[in-house]
Length: 277
Image (tube, rainbow, N blue to C red; front, side, top):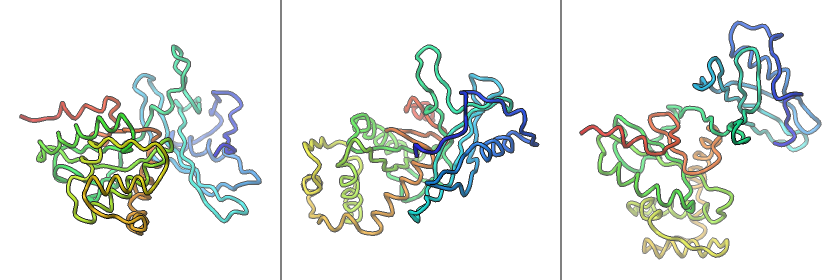
């Protein structure tokens, strides 16, 4: 929400005046004084979800925070995710690479929480396997289209060692993706096997946003007859909503995003080093 602002008059402010027993307490007290209510909303809650040390900056940590807001006059509540950086004496809302002049804030992502692993998201491997791979993907993302088949086939070859959890993350730049995802979920309900692999191996070329065109393509691919009204079944919509809750909890902003054994993997290939022969 663009109107939500922390009262940071400079990129770095001192928080020496905040007396607390722990760094977590300092962060919460800082936020409680810094997040400002407006005529549009009131703040109903502030919490620290998790934190991480920053390896390249000794003594510094990144804090992943949530801010709950009630929108005044709209009978609606929302939760804002944000990140702040601190060494206990100074705090900043962003970090900028001195060489590229670009923010590196979005490179900090919290660890994957245990409760995010759901049996319904398993698409390959064995849930009791030693290694867990979690992938957030959009079926119309070109990078995802080349990546997903490889990781699915890899896990299928090593089902005792790996389990693959798949989470739908349709990007706004691909307006046909929600329809494509819903159709895939309905196809699974109808008993079609290997839906995700087949959909990522298929080359969909949609020239316009058209639900019927998308559905016709999926029906042709799987040899079935899904109706438009089937896309909005309650369980289908809930499945997508639950996936997006995890996307928002992790603050993800692009695809594919890959976690291996709970930690974000920028290379997306670290699982290859975990094979036991």
